[in-house]
Image (cartoon, rainbow, N blue to C red; front, side):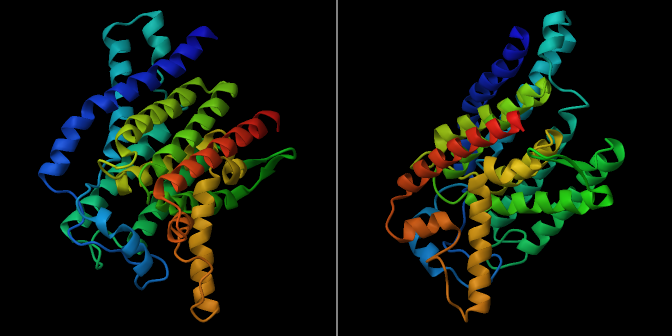
Length: 352
């Protein structure tokens, strides 16, 4: 038990300090090359059209603050995993082999998803700052990003169904529900739903704090399921997130942007299926789901109610800004909600 606790906690601290250490290098690059939007403003992703309220709230922040800050998160996690793995190979012993948590059964798939999603997001960020990619704001269009997520989801679903032989989901307090081939579209749907929640990256410090609570909760779930390697992986991501958050609290030195949000949301989907707690996601990741749901409600309302809106601006965290809440108040209250929901979800996962 002691070695398992050390195996889970120490890599998280290492990831944090690696993240803190590489940030000055990344920051120098981002500011030197002016990796921010060249023109303030945004476009409504799903419904189309302009977003004048959002643009007014964030016109001073859109230009001058670099994107690509999410590199800190996945790079610190990746370096931590590689460092510990190399130590176990260069200095083989019972201790170093036990501390190594890079395993085929538990961490290969989420690590692969993290790296692939983050690199695709990095490409989108590059197109965004250079003003390329197919629509007015630059970057990959929403349709292209959703198609990419769809393809990644198909690969993940295929792996779970055909390689791991998983075709069921756990219904809390009811037992296993067999989906058969329906598991594949269900997996893809969950991954796309989580990805849509990535728009929570809209206020300084908001996304980082929310994701810390979510991945910490999944570290606890994995640990109590005796998936120790997966628990260590989740806390390594949390460590990288804390390093990012150190520099992202108001005023943000950089934004997480797509290279962070895409990698994290897609990885979260894989972790949820590996722990068989996917039906608890709406609780554990409640801020992501309510953020995505607010967008859907807004678009649906405008379409079927002749342009009438439910929120002043969507996603919902910008609605709170629009009614007068300071950004830091929105962020901190979302942090509180995220922590409480993560605790509730963790408890439900343990007792169901």
